[in-house]
Image (cartoon, rainbow, N blue to C red; front, side):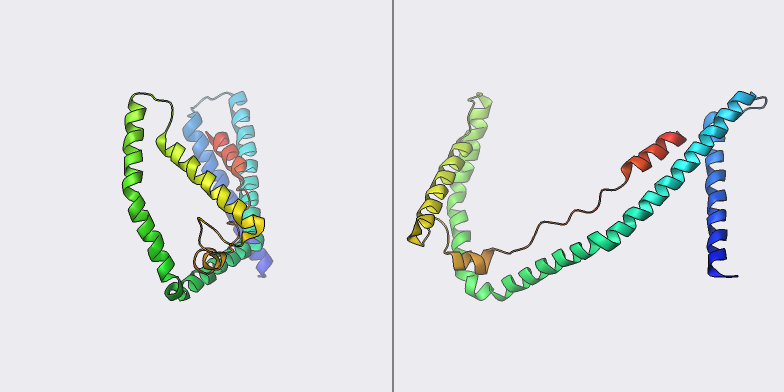
Length: 200
């Protein structure tokens, strides 16, 4: 017996299993009774054929989706993961050179924490009286304005930042050129929902 014949037997047995399962589901759902009319039997048979066809279409589309993932998406995902691993390894190696900058940032966040908590409490109080504005939102806009000034000074040719770390520090200690997470191909959800609606 060749391999192709074995696949034909497996396909035939799978088809029989699916069809008998669907018949069992319909007999449970439609509650076939003794003396059911000929029209009811024909309707149930047509529904069975349609649902069987939808089942095989669903399986075919899921298999195509898996093949598409294996050929197109998984290599992109592996490349994206490798970029992250390389970046994490570089940042680990650079910890001794970046330790001072990390400590400065931690100290800045600790010093700013009481102000942040104060703004949070004031926003809770203002929300209680329906003031219509947020102090944290105003503070964020002030920081964005200062950030815009910083970028304007740097872009004008001054070559330094007043708010940010120097570019070489950002590149060495903070930034990583890792692309966006690769999106997998869209899952054929319509086929699945179509089949589940059919057997209900």
